[in-house]
Length: 147
Image (cartoon, rainbow, N blue to C red; front, side):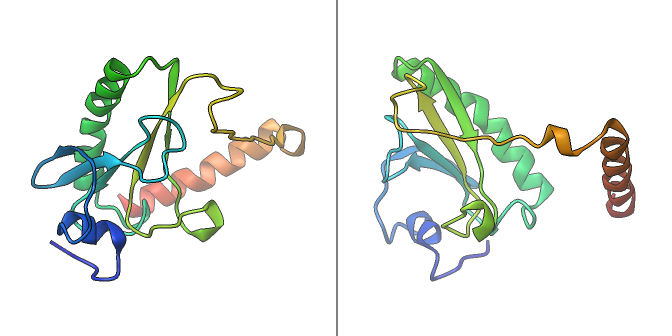
């Protein structure tokens, strides 16, 4: 199992740093985020150091996402939430701050007052239906090359 001695999440896995654990097995760990954007904010990580979605092994992704609904339901059962956002940031441009893949579970209580404010700025007027078809074909071509 890969371990990065400078990674804070690897240190949590190795129990060098304490964490409020929600779930743990041989491959995954879920724990409360120390910053708690909203009450119950939980992180799910692979125990193996994999920096981001681009480097995440498909088997690891499948396993983590098999746990995601169970963890989400447990958070929902414990807290009187109104919804939940799942969030994953990859690379600095996308605001990744810990370079060990992690999935955020953000319980939502009041979308206007609970502390989490995602802001989407759409650009639908910049792309025609033909542009979208061209982009889709380009991505599909990449999928054909890598599978």
